[in-house]
Length: 288
Image 1 (cartoon, rainbow, N blue to C red):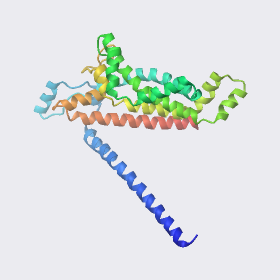
Image 2 (cartoon, one colour):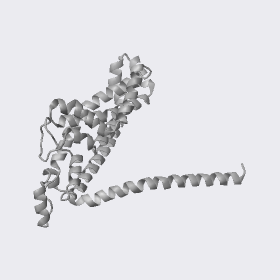
Image 3 (spheres, helix red, strand yellow):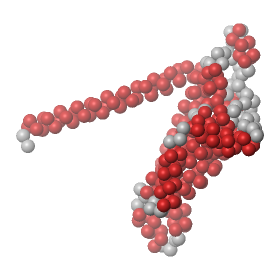
Image 4 (cartoon, helix red, strand yellow):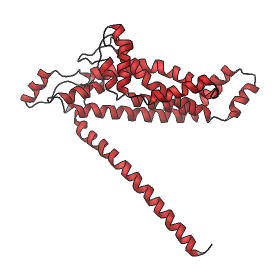
C-alpha cells in the first residue's frame, strides 16, 4: 500500500472523528443549557420549607409579593402524591413487566408471545394523554372521583412496556450455557429462572425499571385526568391528590407563583439523577 492511500485513509479517519465530536457537542450543548438554566433559577428555592410545606395559596402569595418577601409554601403535597402514585404503580408494573418479559424471551416463537410483543410496542407508542383519558373511563368514572389510585393506574400502564422490553432484551443476551448448566444440575425451569437467570440479568432489568420510573415521573397529562391535584398534604389514595408535574403546571398558570416552577423542576431533575446514580451503584455491587 503506497503512502498516498495511507494518507487518504488517515485524513478520512480524522474527518470522521471530528464530525462525530462536533455532533456530540451539538447534542450536549442544549442539554447543558437546559440543566444550567434550571439549576441557576431553581437553586435559590431549595430549602427545608420548600420540601415540607404545601402549595401556597393565592392570597399568601399576593401578600408576600406586596410586602417584598419570599412566597411562603412549597411542594410537599406534590412530593407525597408523586411518591404514593409511583410506589403503587411500581408495585404492580415491576412483577407483571418482569414476568411478561421473561415469557416473551423464553417463548418468542409462539403466536401469543408475538401478539403480546406487538401490543407492547403499540402501548409504548401511545400518547400519554390517551392513556389518561382511557384511565379516566376505566377507573375515575366507576370510582366516581379522582384519586391517587387512578393516577397510579395510568402511570403503571405507561411503565409496563419499558419494563417488559428491558427484561426481554436482557434475558435474550444471557448465555444459553447458564440455563443449560442449571438444568443439568437438576433444577426445573422455574428454579433455574429464579435462582440463575434473573439474578444474572438484574443489572439490565433494574436499569429498565429506572428508565420506566424516569419516564413517568414527569408526566402531567395522565394525572390531570386521574389524580386532578390537591393543595393539601394528603395520604388518602382514594381521593384527589397532587403531584410535582401538576404543581409545575399550576404554578405556570398563576402569575404570582411562576417563579416556583424552577424549584419544582430542579427537584424533578435531582430526583432522576439520584435514581440513575443509585441504579448504577446497585447494579455494580450486584454484579461484582
